[in-house]
Length: 97
Image (tube, rainbow, N blue to C red):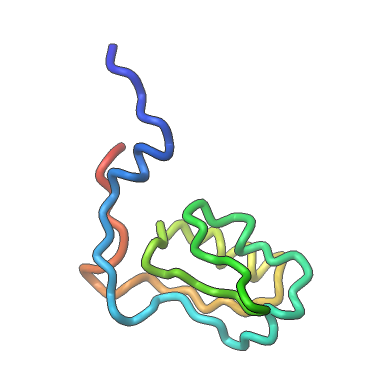
């Protein structure tokens, strides 16, 4: 029997065709500053969101497009995240599983 890949190895096999236009944005960055829970950081498996220099930074190039961040922000956060799928032909390309 062939061994299973670890989650890190499986995700490492994915490819990304990054668009020059971000598909993730904030409706109002100040909403993130006042967000107590910052759930987008907690739920993103690709660590797209991180707090840096007093503001939320978004590394959309690594997005796995699960949509968990959008749900978390709108249910538990301050509803600041604007999430769209990347333009056709761009984004994550899953290679395993």
